[in-house]
Amino acid sequence: MAPDYEVVAEFGDLMPTGVTVTDEGRIFVSFPRWGDDVPYTVAEVVNGEAVAYPNRQLNEWTEGPSGDNLVSVQSVITDPIGHLWLLDTGSHAFAPWVENGPKLVEVDPATDQVVRVVRLDAEALNPTTYLNDVRFDFSRGSGGYAYVTDSQPEGALIVVDLGAGRSWSRLRGHESTKATDQFRAIVQGIVRDNYAVGADGIAISADGSLLYYCPLSGRRLYSVPTSALTDRSLSDEQVAASVVDLGDKGCSDGLETDTAGNLYATAYEHSAVLKRDPTGVWSTVLHGPALLWPDTLAVAADGYLYVSVNQLPRTPLFNDGVDLRVPPYQIIRVNIGAQRIQLTAAG
Image 1 (cartoon, rainbow, N blue to C red):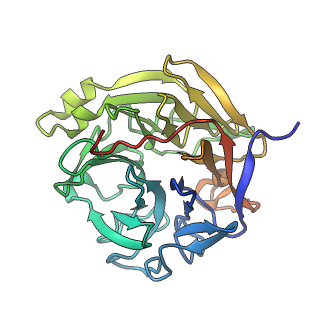
Image 2: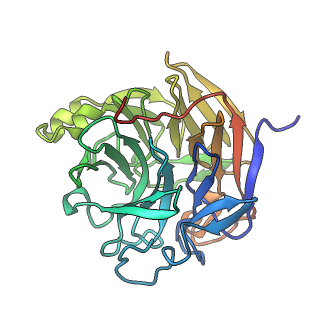
Image 3: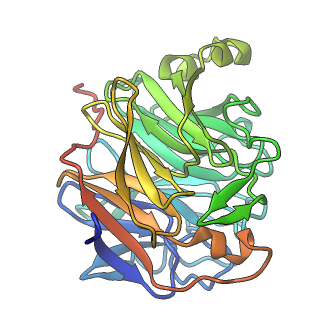
């Protein structure tokens, strides 16, 4: 039987995590520096090939403080107005982040120029913070908000007030953001008990009122009102009281949503992508037995759901130092007839 997805790009030597597609159809990917020789950590896919983006210079980094250069980008996201954001962990090979490393870098694809660099406040981070994924809402606040998952084992959600240039963490160490104790995953028949990853997948509701999220080392889906995350007057206990456990969804890495209220989740134990409809009913969007570790999801204006596939369990960092990866790594897509959420100041 023919697969129900198509391959958009393949990479022989660079392992992708993030993927995003602009409304004009430009595809961008991120290649984190987890130990491989990574000449550039962000690229545009041009004629099926990865090309350093926005340029080679910004992607150059040597040990030490980063300045504005990119250390290791985990996620790339198209925001509500079509700009590209690069989420820099500031961390090389999961080591503690370097000075000035953790940041959000905004790029205008129309000019391929950096618009601004948003550094995170010290109160939003701790020494082992690992910035994983981000979603944007420009319909709230003076300049919009960014919501970021911190996927260290303790886990947290980080809120960035883009208008005020301030950031803070919420739900740090909460049951919903931390790695599940004694967690075990079974990936393509192999028991994996060395995953200790907190809040990872993140998605925002079509009206911006809810944030969905999940630990990678866990099986449950959670939501929290964005109004609770952004209200600095609320205590951590009050924010925690607003968290809703939406039940078992299996093990997921990336999450995504669309304008119709559907939520999509990778199912990395099963080489699949699942969908939760607005009534809470789950179904399978795609299943490809050869797809070892669907990672990031991105709904695009062309109606397709894009997925990065990167063989993460075979990497040395997640395989007791042994590299068993068999390139190529892939970006695939499946037509879901959906539209991406664009929460702009105009509504």
